[in-house]
Length: 309
Image 1 (cartoon, rainbow, N blue to C red):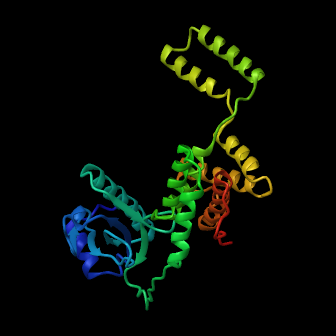
Image 2 (cartoon, rainbow, N blue to C red; image 1 turned 135 degrees about the horizontal axis):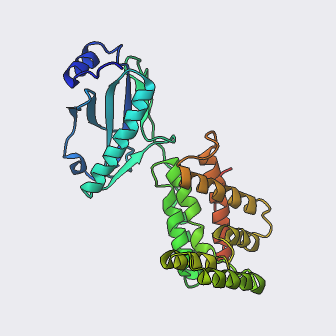
């Protein structure tokens, strides 16, 4: 095994022989104020490994608040080494925010917050533009007036669901947007009892568990609680039931919700979907359209603007 180089020697290679350390990694973050990063505007920090960490202001849309920064880590021989360092950098940034109790949001569109780049390759020309969708004041204020006059007293679960849904697309990554959209469905779920036969079977299981002397009391109590949960259908099944009742003419609603919930479970449990080629933005649009229809059904209203295909 080659002996690790001293950090000063490694820095010399990074600075003077860039072809030997051609890779770097970038992470984009959104903070409330520059104070979250020590009020630095542009700074370069040498790390103990020899790599260089740079913090510089990032671009943001005119309507976005807070501050954005690009944090760059340079000086790696391979793309794989840069990728591993990027994950370490992300972990370090998040822990810094946790331990200092400072809000920080990662911004990315792929499945990894850190983007690997080649230092010696030009990025070429770039073009940047911003746009926004707007409505006539009469349309917006008219909807607000009509809703205030026509809607019945608010149901707390529907209100919570709508609050989560409406904020979802303000999340910074496609994964976060999708997870939040699907999570907006859960307050609407009302799991039904599975009937006396299932309940009777659960009673037998509980009695058998309680009479078992080999299971510790603490674990036994936990298992009893989990067994009692089986008396009702799962959240996923309750949501499919909701789709059937709220949208009886939409034959795709159940499938879309079921697939979205399955995809959400994959991401929540592993961090990634089973199929890395899945288009989360498209899946999000599909489940978003169904959720909006459910709200319209529950509130006995019609959607003014249909979801884009």
